[in-house]
Image (cartoon, rainbow, N blue to C red):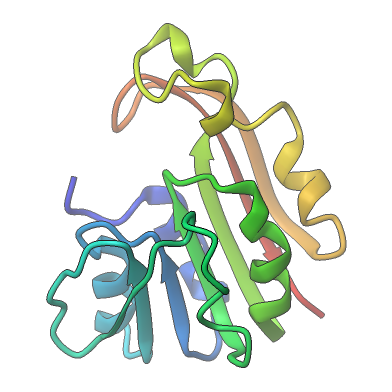
Length: 161
């Protein structure tokens, strides 16, 4: 799964300035996508990955350590296939004026199709809307999808005014 998510691609044109933060970046598919669009990009994950032209921050976001971007503001924050609810307030605080949040991950019901199946890693219906309700919603979807694999997901794109 090296291509950027279609949800991310769909909303990328709403990102007008950087830097862009790719949270729990994995192999860096979204970091590379935004870099190739010409944005300055910061990627964070607990395992180091070499991403040419991208600032990488190695951090265990679930380990109880301080949020490594407390003083930073981003023009966009991308989160895909990752859920750690205690980060929600940090994501809001780190999104700069005019910044875009693009979030997509699994939700309740996904356990029928495989992993993740632990409720701790599955959003509840409407949870992203509620968590980021102070942002202006640009797009929202939840439910079953067939691609890239059959799953139950929730997606939000929202703007900080």
